[in-house]
Image (cartoon, rainbow, N blue to C red):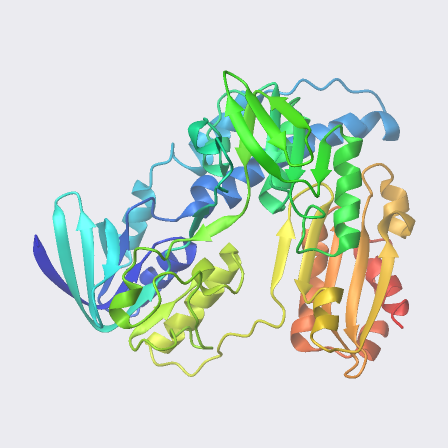
Length: 459
């Protein structure tokens, strides 16, 4: 050991929620040690949300420019990826340097240790650093926020190839001529469309029966149609059997067909970082895929241990990590709630059209034994959709509990779908009666006015 520290709280993992929690506790007067072996701020600002949305914003601008001839003139579009790459490097990531984030954390009053943090029994943490191990004696508690990393499926030959994950994709300085995206989830679909709009020939391969599997089937169908209309090939319901590389990628599919491409992006989900954090030293299963937490973010079966973020299994979203961080702060500082409530968890997929959703899908509601009523409204037939014309693909779908007369879920697909869903998040969270929602004013002509049509369709 190179030296022993002591602290009220140790935060292992400084992604968005962990960084926020550590800084907030330090400002509240607690002695805090924050630990991370990677970049402070985590996946979101360096490899996920922020750089990918910069890519998407640029790609959407190109798409809108190409729509001008349908609406009011003529345009010539000349994509330039260097502009995007420079913005990601300079504005989003500081060339993947976390100096500013570390300084911000330390200015809040926390101590930062770069290294791999591991539980070493109740109230003890060992940090493996380049200079040797350091042990921390913890007075109040440890918060785990170790997050996830890209999952790489065990496909024959894949490990021996120079495939990309999202961490590689956001650092590209030059684009390939062709790309296969393995995985049709949110990350795969977002990046596939962004690269396609910059001139890359893209094929999406999804082993599940449809892309965007967690979303409503109607939402998946809208996005498939939009991607295919832009020239993206979508192959759903087929797995990958083998991958080879000889300067180009050769991807064998389970149905006997094959694909060739210059590049391969693996976007096959995420896996939680729980395998080497010492769970066994506090009586927990080190092979667990998630940790069980109560409404205060306390880990079940392990006193003095809290967990937030992806590893809790409540939703692998930055906003969930931040939400849970605030809950844990309240518990660690002795406040009396409010505690965690997951009835109205929302998410957004930033394809064009965007997909915003909240709460239960129709299938989930039926599986829960709810007497379900649904209502839908196609966006192109709405007042704003008709005016918007090209690029107006989408719909609103609401899922109601007919016995209680409230919404339990909703989906908004279309331009600004991730913004439209905000009103529906409030309705689900606050359990606003259907009668109240139907009696509201919905501004004309707006996209969200289609919510009124969907509500009137509930039966």
